[in-house]
Length: 191
Length: 174
Image (tube, rainbow over all chains, first blue to last red; front, side, top):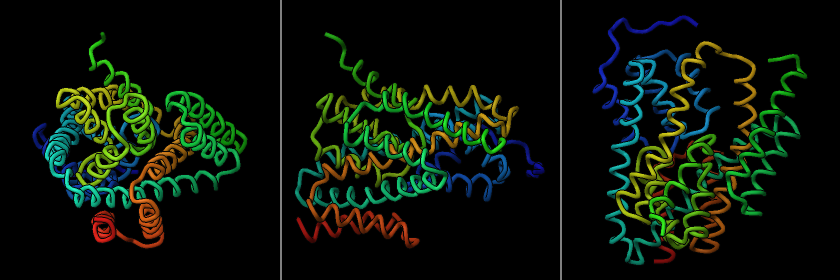
């Protein structure tokens, strides 16, 4: 992939912070990485689609909140360590302040039954979001074979039915999953 | 007696490294800790915070500082935010250069592919755990099921689904 970027000098730290704040404060209902791609690749042309997808794959492979990881990656590409800090702070801090303000205010507001039930309704609809995301991911994994499907099922049962602490589940299942993927790849002759 | 802030670190610091495949994956453990282990709040209040975290913009992982805010106020929230975002951030920062140099190496694909089914199981467990404690009985199941089906079969926007859920509950229960 060729690197075709605008010849303009890289954006300043304040510009980076504000651009990430904008994405952080205008993205509702998940799908943040899609919004980031539109903003930074499409609108601002700060990096190419290939660079973006490269970073996305890193952030999905590493632990941590994907969108924050991605902010660090993009900020780092633009302005090194300080750019990474500006990007991550822009993504997190304004949205965090807003979220805490909402909790503080809602503490009073939801004492009424109407507001309480409306939030319960939002929660129920939002669960659909989680479940469809999980189902899609499970389907993609299951199509790769019986072993990945078994890993999905075992992780689910351990957390939901057995209520085991997440740390033990991940410490067992993550190496198992990676070993299985590596084994499957080597059997097909790399790739 | 230990300082209560240690609890915040103890709960959220490990989650920084356990978040695979997006903030959704740790919700079942945040719930387990907040309600069952630490006793910071009831199921009902946790669900309200979960709903608020979906209604506000930004990373879904902000649920964690919101829970800590409820438990221990603004400083607890700040500490939780630092605990959950900082450690993994340094990991990415440290690996960003290495990732460029070894682009496309087999181990990267193995890690990415190998974690995907674990993340899927975690996200499904988060959905099921909250459904188990959801308020509204059969109506909560019906709304969650309808929203799942709509999202999977149509291009319905979450923008509309969340207020629709609120409206249905308000008409039926309030």
